[in-house]
Each structure stands twice: as C-alpha cells, then as structure tokens.
Image 1: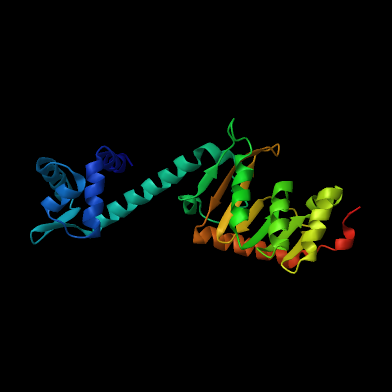
Image 2: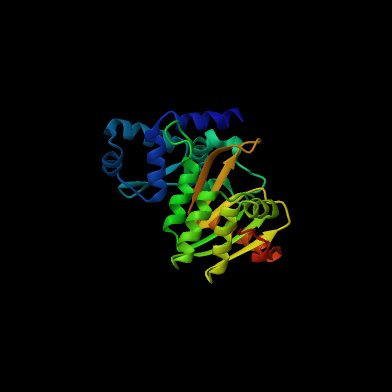
Length: 265
C-alpha cells in the first residue's frame, strides 16, 4: 500500500499533474495546447510529461502526447476519488442527519444537490425551501411521516385553483394530527374535494419526509430528537428514480383517506 500512497501523493501535490493527465486521457494534446489550458510554463509542462513518461502513463502521438491505457486508468481513478471527496465535503455538515438506511441510492448522486440549513436570520429556511418548490410545481407527490401547515396551505390553494396536481401518502399519525385541528382539517377536506388531489394513509412506518415537486426530490433532515436540522434536494435522475419507486411502493399498499374521517366543524 505504501507504494500506491506515494503515487497518490505524487499526483495530489500538483494540480498541474492532475489536470494534464486528465487532459491527455481525453485526447492527444501538444505541449503548447497543455500550456494554453493550464497556464503552466513550458518548463513545468516538460517536467510533468517526463514524470508521466517514466511511469508509462503517456506516449507520443506524432507531435502530441496521449495517455496510455494505464494512464487513463489512473486518471479515471483519481477523478473518481476527487468526486467522492467533493461529495463528502458537501455533505459533511449534515452527514449525521442523513437517513442513509432509507435512501436507496448512491450518495455520489448528491454531488449537485442543494443543501439548506437554518440560520439566525432564516431559522425556517429548510421548510421555506420546500414551500418555494411547491409554489412552482405542476405535479407534487409526498410520502412522509409529517405534513406541516405551510405546505398543506400552499398545496390546497394551488390544487383547488387547478394549478397543481397532488398525490400524498402519509403515516396514520399525520392524518390523525391534521384531523384533530379544525382549521387544518378543513384545508385537508377542501383538498380532497378537488379532482386534482388524492391522499392515502399508510399503516407502515415511514422514516422519511420526502416531497417530489415535478422533477426535484426534497428531503427534510431531522436529528434523533425530531428537530429539523436541514433539507437536501436534487434533480439527479437516479435520485428521482428512487423517489418514484419508493412513492409507488407506499402508494400501492396505502388506503384512500375517507373525507368523513375529518373534523370540519
């Protein structure tokens, strides 16, 4: 392992080495072309190319240089490691709140995700993020163990106005809590009266609070005490595919909410 770590260190200690190897793995390039892209001097380019040639990572291709099969292997592997570290740094502050056991996709798919955390000036920022998504979406699906008043209000207003189609599947506790409050119960009843909305109850435990607003998947992140700590949302196709499949599973085993079960007095 020591020899392998030395090679990683060799690359990592010079951003020029990383960039040049990646460029040559993509296509043949001349020394001048490498200098133009990297901004490195001809002397630096020459030293890097010599180091690569000694490792058989590059070969001459006419007047240009190109990565060998092993050179491409190293370039691809190092790029993958950089991607992993980039995602780790992005998720580091919220990693302890990620419900990884329930997220059925590789965390690498969150490389371009949006993370929203509370602040002193915006303590409700994660919820506001989902409200912004709800306010722009034509089709909303939710599978969740929670349903806040603000989200219900936005969905009810847009759905009854014919601006949105809504499908929600919730745990029994959520519906019971909404039904116990007359104001929220009336909003939920109003939602059920429209032809553009359907709500179902799932008796199985639901560990996540997920909103799918068109093609954006939004997940609320809470600590072990249930306190909201952050939210994360992504339009990555793999994340959306996971959300589609999970929603369908809950939806297929859930039962439609009967409006007569709601308190509207």
